[in-house]
Image (tube, rainbow, N blue to C red; front, side):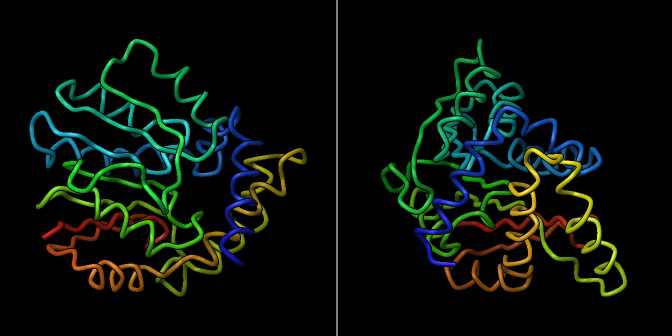
Length: 233
């Protein structure tokens, strides 16, 4: 799928499902998404310097940013997304928090200076972008030296015995659980985006290509959800 066409399609999907997005995520992940995102948040909380800045790319309705902001009020968090509808939901959820800034923007052309952030994360968003390498390259660009880049996402599982069950659930059941008849096509796209996404090892190779070091991999649900982090030299 061409970059412009994919970007337009994904933007339309998230503009449409923003109001139901959080509850739908809980349904389609059977509640596991909170634990998976909690793993990412815990790493960020433990590894980000005091008074640091954190960039949450493709932040959606802002759950990662809000979680971090509540746990560490010394951090300044910027949540960036290209969907104004998703950001409106994030703003509603974050009322009363003074250490979050929401910004509409393109993950492939981040509107920030080099060496601006102590950490940068992207959660279940990279697979929906039109150029994975460009997004990660931009995230690395805005990181300070020794800043950490985190990517949490869905993958086709490595285990060949688990893979058929995974395919059946995500292709046939997940779209109905997430969107019902009304938004079936939007949630079927989320299945397709995972199928088209890099495999875990390919993403690791991309981290290496970009010169990220001290790579760490945390795998859940037989590889259906993986967190990969790397440090900027």
